[in-house]
Figure 1: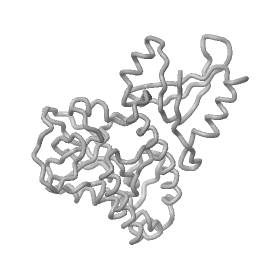
Figure 2: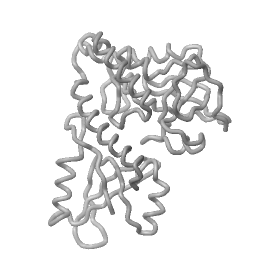
Figure 3: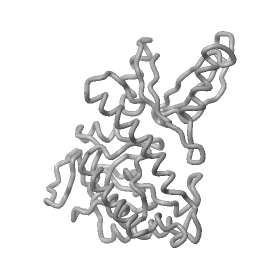
Length: 293
């Protein structure tokens, strides 16, 4: 599989990239494409974008501005039978296609038109999305700088999501508050990335799933950086009620087990996780933590 299309100087590509055929635009932040030598379309989750919904898919409400975002994305790619996808890393194409996938198996990428225009930057600049860093800042400094400047430009002009009453008739999402929460999470992820670069042996449940699976088989100890989103009670083989935190994705399931949550250290650990880590849009929290075991 080739990843060496010739790009014009206008492209600001830092990661591994691949030229693919476009199938259709699904939403303002999702499109479907055909990978080389494949007849099956794949969904792309475009990084650092979080447009409002144009159809009911998640807990987020459908909004007029979400429908406008989809319409703009359709027009953005009009006449484009092919696009360039860029991965947030410099691994080989084969490794990138396996490594950079989200909760629903969608590829996590940035998307460029063949003329060099970056969809993420354009959508942020026009106010269709904030700079979405809930799951981390853009991996490359040049991307992060462009997206941050684009967001500031939209805020200065009170465009799109920054003018909720103007585009939706009422305030549906509190973006200033959301961005404060996202920045907290992004800062935690930045420190994790810095630790990895400095040589710390810390695993990621998504990117290092194969390595963690082997360590689990041998019973080896590992330090894992992960997001904890929920907890449920579970009764194990030994006495006492425990809790399980499901922190993996659909295709890479991963769980953390906390024994004896009704007393002692188990109960204290459970309260710490609930008070400090598990969060949502209505109840923001840190989300990410380090787990050793």
